[in-house]
Image (cartoon, rainbow, N blue to C red; front, top):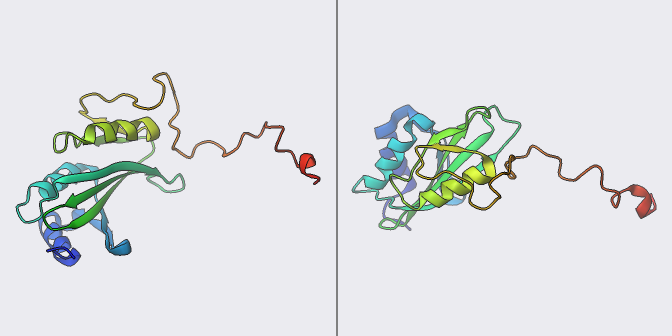
Length: 167
C-alpha cells in the first residue's frame, strides 16, 4: 500500500484544480480521471513537481479511439510516484477534427518516443514536439492504423465466401 491514499491524492488535486478534474473512478484501485487539454501541462507539472506527490515516472502515454463518442480520440497518461508507490491515470478526450494537444517532452524526455508512436498510430498532433514524425510506419503512409475507420475485413476477399464452407 502506498504512503498516500487515492482519496488524499484526489483531494490534493481537486484543491489545486477544482472543477478541471472530472469523471473520477478507481478501476482496480487505479485512480483515473479526465481533464481538458488546456490544463493538462499544468496538471502534469503539479503531479511531477509537488514535493509530497512526486509522480516523476511517466509509465505510459498512448491513445484510444471511440468513434461513437462526441470526442472520439482520447490521450491517456499513466504516471507513477515511486516515492509513494501510487499510480494515476489521466485521460484527455479530443474532437475528431481537432487532435492537437501540448507535448509533455518538457516534463519527461521519455515522452518523446511515446508521443511519436501515438502520432504514428492515432494521428494525435503534439504541439511543440521537438521531432514529431512517424516512428514505426512508413513515412508516406496517409492513414492511422489504430483508428477504427476501416472495416475489419476486406469485403473483396474470395476465400471468405460462404460457399467455401458449405453454407
